[in-house]
Image 1 (cartoon, rainbow, N blue to C red):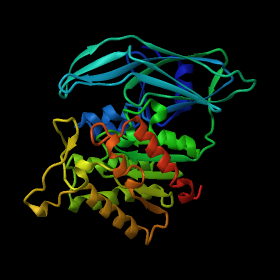
Image 2: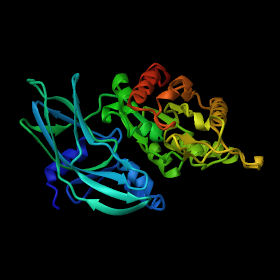
Image 3: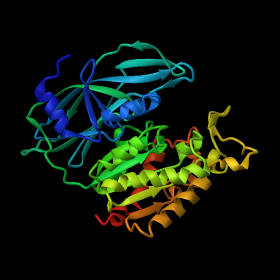
Image 4: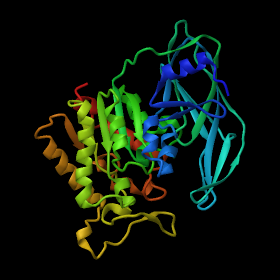
Length: 380
């Protein structure tokens, strides 16, 4: 299809929290990872899938419009093997204390059996019609895209001219993490905990939280490195354990390498290293995770080969705390935050599957993160 040049320019100039815009079947597609990374994760399709689920991605628009209509096509996933069905796609709009969310379940549905796509059920375009308070002068309007599915953005229509915000008045917070920061099961894009926390703290957010993908890959480190951040947070550990992707021997060096890559271009940007939140199944037991008969995550018994150095969340927290203490002797701008201060053992009963908080739990993490006063840590 042919994308109108004015629409393409508007979207590219107003886009925040995504690195790549491409043309799809219906409209514009987005990824939170740059195009150049795709060669490096082509062997693991989950990475592209999660990067294209747009947690934290939004448009910063300037307009005096009281009516804004956004047309898009969602591409949601369903898996016949385990009964998974993505929730409705939700767009949210915020401006000067006003916020509204609109959900749809009428887009395309991509059917999986295990890891194989067996069918695409073609749906319809979704139209989100927002009515904003009447104003005399243009103001910032932010449109937040769905965190739980891919979309193609087709058009933006309004009853007053719309232009991209030309500058960012807030410092940029870049966050790297797992599904627990991606927050697919949040109550819409505003319930994603880094989004909720950034709005409370007055940050512009770029989230590189991708479900199942926080394994310290260098393409992610280089993506973080190249973003002009005022604060960087790295929430590390749960994917390393539940995928059994590192050991006690390899995890620490991988974290050092990830941070070293960032420091190549950002030698003094504050970096906050966050250890895992509570997950009872893996506090003392290694991965890989499996699902028990009650639908909750189970860990594994320890191997009889102790030399393997299997990781647990208790062990991860110890490694990260010691690593940050060591680096802080020569790097005064690195900090450690125990993930249990964000979501602790007392909160574990609210995790439906034993590993992911529910929608209310994500709001708890946001509240507790704000309470850690990260702007003071970053001297912002």
